[in-house]
Length: 227
Picture (cartoon, rainbow, N blue to C red):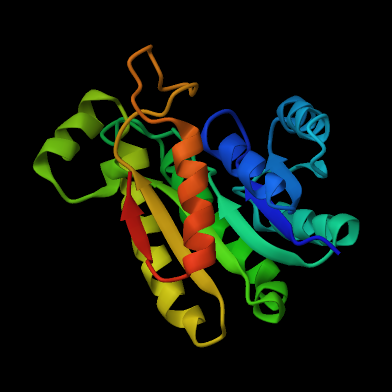
């Protein structure tokens, strides 16, 4: 039976590159996102390349949706060997005016959703000696220049969420290492080609990130690296 990877927050860019890379290496893919059309079209496109991929629409800010999605993916594709988390929320761009609900939603995806997903797949990951692979962003770093960018880009909520996610990755890596589960993140410090952030001057090829995730999955040594 093929190994299975859940890709949370599927869309153009990094998550598609991860799907293509892991699919080419023989993984079955569970593509997850709120947009049913996007995940369905993505699954069909990958299937056309000979990769087994299925769409699982879910709101990744809601733990009950996440648990149901994991159960459905496991039933359809088999035990989960890896979880890749690219989901994020761009809400609460201006923390001086954002509603409490918007702030909560940003953290619900980055921290609550990722935590719920890890808990849901953990029995499989332990049995499979699997991995949690997280996409993160440089706006979460403690740096005055990046703080300025976060304000200018109206991405204050995302900046806070990235910082929290960075800490979550470190804690999970420490906690799960003894159980044979690898946890690692790639912190993206530039704009990725083909994404909503690309205004034509993006410098990062998503395939580079996808290949790096595969390298980290195999090496299982570095908890955090930047691209």
